[in-house]
Image (cartoon, one colour):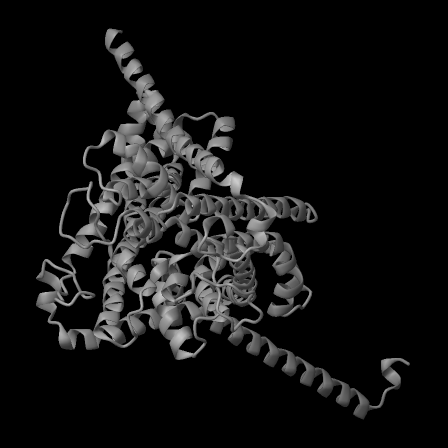
Length: 315
Length: 285
C-alpha cells in the first residue's frame, strides 16, 4: 500500500502521531537531563551539608566558650574535670607532624619528579612510575601500623629519648605516603613545559642539571608549588597514621620526640570514647572539624587556582 | 674545559641523588611489605578467616570484618557508581559553559581534597542521626559513597572525554537524540574506562578507616551482618583495633589482616588493568 492510496485523514493522523512521539521523546530527554543535572548537584549539596553540619554544631559551642579562649588558651582538656578549650596544642601538633612530612616529601618527591621526567630512560620510567604510585594506594591504617611497629623502633635506636608515641615517626611515615602526590603532580607540571624551552637551553651549552634548575623548574614552578600546597592539605587532614603513632596527648610543644595530638587524632579519640552526643564535650569534634575543613579549603582552593592559571599559559 | 668538566660532574652527582630519591620510596614500600609478611604470614590459617574477634589473640579472626567490608563495598558501589557516572555525563555531555557549571566543578575539585574524617562528621549527623540509620552498614556505605564521588566523577569524565567526537557527530547526523547518542554510542565505548575508575575508587573506599570510626562503626562484632541495618566492622577498623593493643599477638593479627587487605587491593587493581586492556580491544576506529 503506497502513500498515494492513503486518505488525507490517515496521513494527518500519522503526522499527528509522529509529532506526539517526538514530543514524548523530547520530554523524556528533558527528564533525563534533569536527573543528570541533579546527580551533578550532589557535590554542591555535599559541600553545603558539610558546612551546615559543622557550623550548626559549632555555634552552641561558642555560646559557652569565647573565641578568644578558643584561640589563645594554651591547654586543650575538654574531657578532663578541669576543662580548657584552647585549640593551640592541637593546631601545633597538626603543624608539627605536617611539617615533618613535608620536609621529607617535598625534596624526595621533587627529585623523583625531576628524575622521572628529565633523566630516566623510557623503560625505567615505565617501571618506576607505577611502582611509586603503589605508595599512594596503600591504606593509611597500614602506614599507621608501619609507623608504630617499624619506624618508631628503628628510630629509637638512633634518636635518644624518643617516646613510644611521637610526632617524628608519624610525620616521616606520612611523608613517605605523600611522596607520590608531590612527584606525580610536579612531573605533570614539568611535562607541560614546552620542549622548545629545554632544547634552547641545551643549544646554549647548558648541562642537564643546569637545564633542570635554571629552565625547567622555574618554568614549571607554579605547578610544583601547587603540588606542595596539596601535599600540605593532605598532611593536615591525614588521620590514621597520627591517631596510631603520634599519640593522644595535646601538649603545646615543638619537640618531635614527644607524644602529641593532632586535630584529626582528637576527633578519632572522642569518636571511640563514650562521650554522649549533644554535650559541650562532644561538640568539640565539630568545632575541630570546622577548623580542619577551613584550613584545607583555603589550601585546596589556592592550589586549584594556581593549577588553572598555569594551564592557561602553556595551552 | 676544566670548568665544563666540573659542571658535568656536578650534574652526574645530582643524577645519582635524584635516582636515590626515586628509589627511596620504593625501598620503604619494600620494607613495609617485608615487615607485614614477616609478622603476619604465620597467623594466616582457615580459622583466621572463620573466627570472630576475641580477647585472646590466638583465637581472634577477621570473619565479621571481612563480611562487613563486603557488605559496605557492595552498597557503596550501588550508591556511588550510578550517581558518579550520571554527574560525569551531565558535566561532559550536557553542561553549558557557565558560572554554575564552573561552581560544580570547583566543588568537586575541592571535595576531592576534604579530609576523609570530615566526611565522617557529615555522615554522623546526616545519616546516623538525621536519617536515624544508627551505626549501620547503610550509614557507612552512604558516607563512603559521598567520599569517593569526586574520584568517580573525575575518572568517568576522563573516560567520556576519550570517546571521539566523530562518533557522536555521526549519530547526531542520523537523527539520534542526545540521550540516544549517549546511551547507544558514547557509554559503550567509555565503559572500560568508567569500570576502571570505579574499581580504583572502590579500592580507595575499602581502605578507609577514619570516617567509619567517626560514624561509630563498632570494633567488636561477634555475629554475621545479615541486613544493611545491622551494626558492622570492616577490615581497616579491625586492623586499627589490633594495632592499638599492646600485645604482640594482636600485632601479628593486625599484620595478617593487612596482608588480606593488600591482597584484596592488589586483586582489584590487577582486575582494573586487565579489564581495561581486555575490553578496550573490542573497539577499533
